[in-house]
Length: 605
Image (cartoon, rainbow, N blue to C red; front, side, top):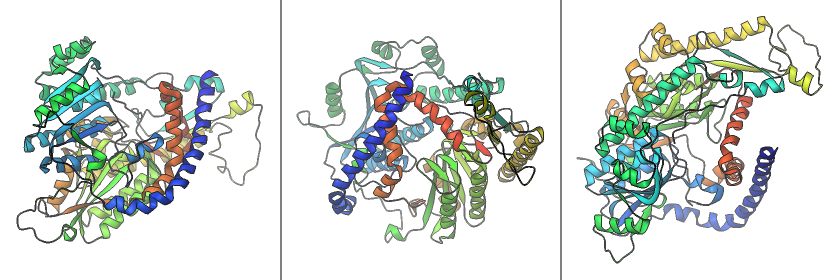
């Protein structure tokens, strides 16, 4: 009851805060709108001898929001966060900006997947190598995610009483079968033929992991961990055996241990690391550091070097389109955090029909979702591929429906830790007859014009015949899915089925199996798309699709969800994770049609 009251209070608080925030917006909107355009155009002034200050405590999206204000409080904090595209562009600018003398990684909290962090890490490696400018990392506490990025620094610092978490990876799922038993609810889970690894529905039908689910999850975690320690070891001069020993024995239990094990260079407080920064970057020791954060630096102007023989404005250059597809796949139009099949299809079609767009990069960061929407987007990729090069760049995850929309591309790029594959399909229909009859005392009766008119009702179980019909739908879609992959990847259907069956793979394994062509990030995919289109380096520009809403349109569309999420986090603290798990059940309730969805969520701390 106590937990229920906490959740109810969080919801009530969220509703109240929505009203208060809307009132604040109304009061401030006239003044804000009056200055919006000037703020958008006004470039950030960067002083000489500045430091690029990188903090990544907000969610990192593939594409940054269209936000000229950079609000940084309460529920607006995540809305003002930068996209990966902004972060990479800013590091590229800082590399050639004589006003920037180095990078300060301030990393106590990092809110991004490992694939995203690898792209940032690789860009920082390039920054160091090509500019000769130092990178310094500092934190009160390093999580395994934040330390992965910190390892790229020339020096890694930790506060004397701080902590460094280095203990390997684990995966834990919540299972609802016991709850549904008590409620007298049966979840009828129907997956594709031999889709034994398509374990999404197991959370609602089992009380523990199936052997197949354990097998694929173990392989996934070990693959990600091996990439992690290989990358960290290369940067810190430690071999993987040492790093495995540190994790296995939990050899880092206090800050001094982190130094003794070679993971951290020195223990210092923030004021001391700032003095070190001044010394490393040749700054005046008696003056404060001029630090510019990522949000402001996005608006800083740094001239691009012209390619050999280049003349005229960059706006006259041919274009490479980047179509961003991030979130769950749903039918219709995109909503906050979701990929709408109609929206992304229209974006790909628009890029295909634009004669100034010479190549398309489809950036996919999705665990899948609606099978129908996935097929609609796949068709647009196929049509675009017939007219111009199409390259897929996979982010943290491009699985199930996320792989479906990718498989028709000319080439597929993925990070070693990208979670992909999950070639499979399922359907779920709850049978709530026992709940209604036995728990609530409700009964149902009715009439229908035809035999199968009431087949999808939740008030009774499916008959054997009805279950067979739905199984046929699922099997047919799986056959279509495997055929799409076979055609796109030049494999036989049998080969696809042998690596399909709903199983997820790391990007490294996917490349070995032929599901991915090359390991690399968004910038590598862009360069390859331009090369395939015959464009010379530096003689093209990138444009993003779909067209972004302006800030206030985006705010109105997503305010409610963002305020509720913020209120839950502020009110529930650690219990907010429990609320997120119950939101997974709500997401299942909103599913319609057959689903091509990754079987579980992977979190890396």
